[in-house]
Structures are given as structure tokens and as C-alpha cells.
Image 1 (cartoon, rainbow, N blue to C red):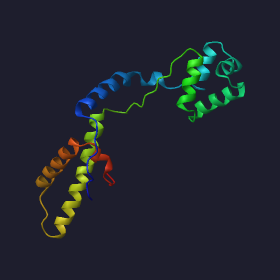
Image 2: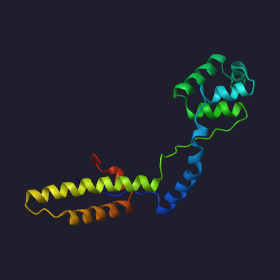
Image 3: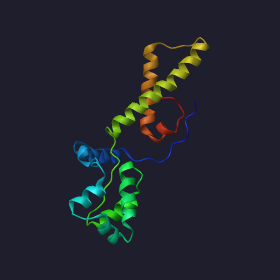
Image 4: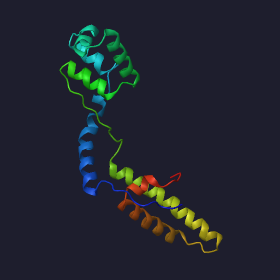
Length: 163
């Protein structure tokens, strides 16, 4: 397995800052899950707006609004359509891709798995040549590889491995 050249990635400080922003959002994640029928339908109904009223504001047909609401519910609406509908209802669209856990822990886990895979391949080759190392040396090598990978996170995703 070869390790490709590193690509430019966010700095450690950038990752910490974005992690802090995500941490503030994480407790509220359930609040932002779309209601049954989607946000467009929920807000429109809350405003007492009929589909044809929203359609008039958007310059489309009521059927187009119904289709947009259906697409939102099934998860195939575009961000642009959501933004336009929100604007037409005097609302603002926010969206976020919220990681399930911190970026630091995701990178740490990925680096560990990849380092173990790389070290395992090296260990296998060395064993075939009757040069296998002990567990302690192997773990030290894993830690070394992991530290190197964490210095350049783009390497974590470029390598082709099952890790």
C-alpha cells in the first residue's frame, strides 16, 4: 500500500474551531429534524398559507408547490428550492452537515485503523522473511504511523484500504 502525496487540508486550529461550532449545535440536533411532511409544509401551514398562496409568491403553480413539498419529504428537494420557498414565506434557510462526533475523534479513529492496517502489512511481509517483530515494537510502529497520518489528515482518506 502506498501513501499518496498530501493535499492541503484544514489546519489543526481550523478543525478545533469547527469542532467547537459543531459542539454547540449537537445538543440541538433533534430540534432541527424535519417535521412530518417537511419544513415547507409545516411553516406554510403554521402561517395559514395555502399551497396556491405560496405558489403565487414563488411564481409557480400550486401543483409545483405540492411537488416541492413531496420532494422535501422524500429527501430529494434542492437546497435552492428550499431557500426560495423559505424566502417566499419570510423565513431563512439554514442547513448544516453535523458530524456524529468530534472531528478530532473521527480523525484519531481513522488514523488508528489505517496505521494498524499499514503496520499489519509490514508485519506480514517481515514475518514471511522471518524478520517479524514483537507486539511491543509493532504497537510502537502503529503509534508512529498514526502520528504521521494525523499531521496530514488528507492522507487518511486517500489511502485505499479496508481500514
